[in-house]
Length: 509
Image (cartoon, one colour):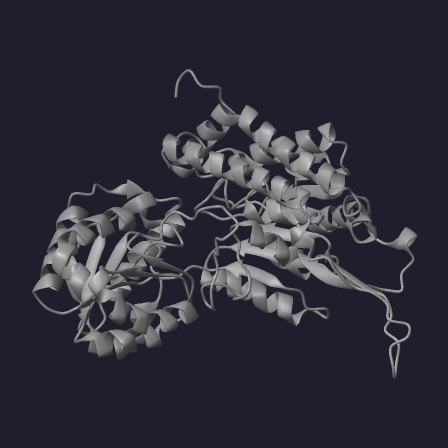
């Protein structure tokens, strides 16, 4: 990285076009190099940012779709122009490889450009018109027109595991800005410098496109009350969150307890179970086991779509699958995790799973500091069904094989699942009948159902769903990835007998 330009963060908050230092500081904890001082957030700074967002809403929500599309494209341009510096600070802070961050940067700019193209079409507005029927008996019908309108200022919480695609200018921010909603981001403490350089890119786009400066603000954390103050601020209209079940549920409860409750769109993770059908196992069980190990350890298992559970029919094919997975996992060298807190939680999680009755350790390793290595366990289907704790997510490269007695018990295991982001079927053509029997269960349990693949890697496109029943997410009708994500920050408004001169331009056409 020696010849690449370096980014030196100043550690300040961006509030309505200006950089502000907080009253207190914390020190960042990068994987590589010295930490830098970061201003702590505060309730006063939250109020300043949200007030500015509310003021900006009136002008920003009234901008044309073309103007907002140009703004989103300009943000993407500004991020791309800082590409090498973003990779430099991102690798230093997170330990993620440069190639991973470069790919994630492309995904981030790609979804900004996707939303720009999406709003230039008016499909997302769901325009409807029921013309007046003045002569209808027994009562006339008024002229009724409907369209989707932006909800107001949105709070976005940056994720630890995706410093670009699910953070400052990630999918939540992109979809909210596309909808016409100003955004206040709470940056994640794990990568404050990365958040800062992305915020600077957004600020440059705001100025170039002459948008109201309150349309975007970014506040660092470091103080417990910042997140709570943000979701409880009376001018915040909705929240986008990607993170842990514990943290997300606490914020969700705060949103629900407000005098005026607001929607909390939390993506909280899952174990993403795979169901391996008999013919597929007989034909290629070992190959699936090897490939599973690669998916399980991708990014040190720090993906919310990490396929942590494999459900198989007990027998020789299951033995071959487990042996292949164990061999592939044992060849994996320890990798650095995003934070010391995540690494500690991973060690505690595998220790808890390993201590459960009837759980057998297939592969055990040693982990210390921020390094993590894979673990592999197995358990019978009956013991799985008897112990709810085995279905809880362990964030990291841990896999569990559930040996079902037969297809009937496999179905019972599927029925016992909590809500998931994904469920996967590994199957051959001769497994179609068995897979068809499972599919109604899996589609009720997950937002995305796969066949013959692995869920790590979420395509950004119109058809993608990244969400699912609780606890995978707090709103089973929403997605945080893909063009449908914009609907989280819109609401329908009906205009009755409205003169055309008062109607939004899309309804007057």
